[in-house]
Length: 232
Ligand SMILES: [Zn+2]
Image (cartoon, rainbow, N blue to C red; front, side, top):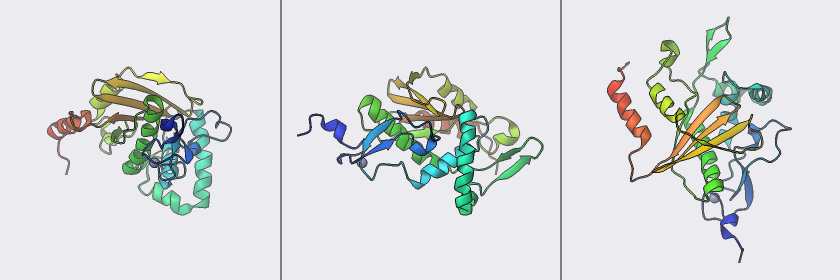
């Protein structure tokens, strides 16, 4: 009998762990910044280190404005991955639109489902590590990404919600490479909420979804549906 069975089980299911998953995935960390990364025990199915979404999400983040210097290094890695696969480039940036050639501003649509799938795995692993609780139902919101309408108007209907998430007094957790990844968490009375920050500028929020309580996000969607002018 293992002395601590919870250590030996996968962070996401009841199968025995056969690998260690890096969370966030190792490829988010530039070579030379890979010491002391967070890992959780994982079965082979739930180890997302090499999942197809990971490379997509990393590349989509790399070209985001407002990242720190370490995030800038990522662009070189990303360019190399595009050199190997021009198809990957076109898939990632199929909606690329140049907004200003003078200011080098362009936009593209992020595939939010892939971002959310990857970030759910990350927060699930972090939560297991910190709280020893397996929880697979999370709502993910990316305050850094703007809705299409806000590009012209400067703000969108989610700004109040972004403000709300930003005012939560997250307790920061220690990470080995905070300029690549840092995070904090906070226990609301109905569950945990997390804020993940990549490269100092790409922010992701995730909170527990429960069946028995009203969800922040659904409340916001309702507010949006009643307040937002229909645009089609
Ligand atoms: Zn598993």
